Image (cartoon, rainbow, N blue to C red):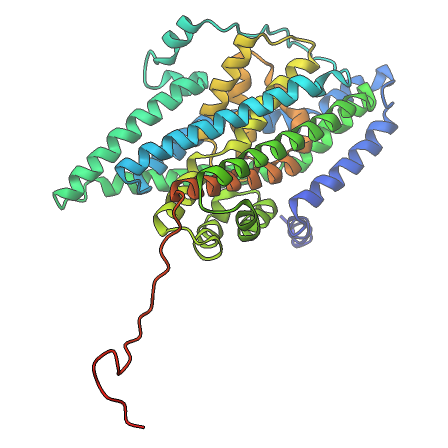
Length: 438
Ligand code: ASP
């Protein structure tokens, strides 16, 4: 690369991602309009279709990264997080109820507002897939993998989670046994898993750097072929997701009001630094140190509850992501004019829980695991391309809710009794029985 080229690429990299995407959007609309805005010249069709190539490639890599990301994220958390036994069970129940509530709120809002019926989007060529019907027995049968490697090849999210959880639990137990015997045999494996996890995250960063190019191509193509009507439904989808995230935040505050000594006002004011940090970084993992600090210093929780919610939650608890994935699947089904029966929505609930557990607390991880939710109900993953255009913003919002969810769990674990203030008793001379001399 010449000096001038490398200067130019450094200049581009210094622009924040959301600005890069905004620039890509503006250019794409201009190109889309000049190529026909819904009434393209047949001579240009091949060129217009090729505009989607970068987006297809980005989606392909995201699908490929999904399985290693989930597997390594779960193994890494099991090997490195410290969870005491009894609190672990309470934690599990809190995590599960909150995540199920988030998904139900998401599905409810998407069913009522129906964002997908606001604009018609043509199905990409070759997507005649039919939705998978819910059959509880085959679901159970299919959840057990036929071989250890098959789920990695098939991108089967439920089987991958089962493998990840089994190995995670066993490795954790082995580590505990070895520590008790003063052995360190587990260390090399722990280091390999940590390094591989970091490597996958690094590759994901490269792919994310290409997102502006993907957005440019897919938006230019969509505008050129279909005009602006598809974006109407995307706008309603953004509103629907924001409404659902807001309702979930209210649900947290109600739980805190009744299940913890912390008042919702104290929670919101004390936690504001963490919410803002989550919004600006799109990463609950990067926000974790701040989450941990505000829980202890500003809200005043015990260290044990703060660490369980913040440290474990930032890895496993992603309610905002679960809510978003469920809504996105329903949205695309609506766009396709496919009615999702209750059984199929239940399948979405199940896979969204699994996908949110597997989504690491890093930017756009939800987009990666979403490919698995779509595949599990038979929705064409090509449509995730459209969601890429709005993910940079919705990712920030759902990350803030993910962090709020972790903090809620901490507040609930802390219980209704505030931690006793440490009384500093300064012994006076009189209390020691000594006479003071005036
Ligand atoms: N960015 C989110 C987080 O860090 C994960 C996601 O993409 O949904 O919590």
